[in-house]
Length: 298
Image (cartoon, rainbow, N blue to C red; front, side, top):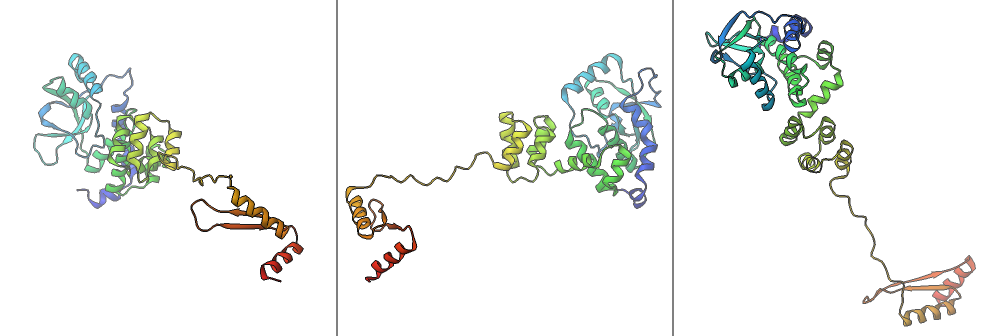
């Protein structure tokens, strides 16, 4: 559990103090000799960080790293701390991929550098390490930002300033966490891009639309379109066509009324119906007066 002092401390001070270790983890200079480990620890005495924001590890990439480790060993030591509750056990601060790959390579011991990190610093190091990796998926990155904000009370402005990420970038990744589980899985697996996913945020049929997008291999623009219109375009409401052909009796009555009134008369009588409509067209007010007198019997 994180104490109030840790929660309220300055994020900038903590991260700046940890950046050196993290930068060495991510990209040590090629010409630099790997750091000397403090000691070698049996693999079974090392535990992963339960707050590690990275949940997905590419199987093929792990196998490739394991092959390299089997041949050359673990070149870059893991950063660990003493486990908070288990004696003679260490908790990984940075380097979980190497720990996993070492087990695949059946190593008995791994090199480590021991640091005295608080719970807050452990999480911050894990976040920094992960967000700087090119292969980190957007769901894990967004989850890391959310952990920093929810657990330690940091704001998007603070994260943006210290981590060198725009506020909109952080906000967009955190919004992706609101998508259904299946859609998030597509993102993790690389079947959907962030552009596809952003079009589905807040949509009632997000999962259904995502399934369709993946199955059809649709573009981001297509995803935005179906998010607005749905999967099927609504059929245009067309009135049934009315036949312009009238029977002889109707035409005769129209002609008689037109002759009697001196105005054009049209009768709309639907087949098999009792009622209908009579339309009388007048050309001026005088004709209208004549029509009124005729109808009133004048």
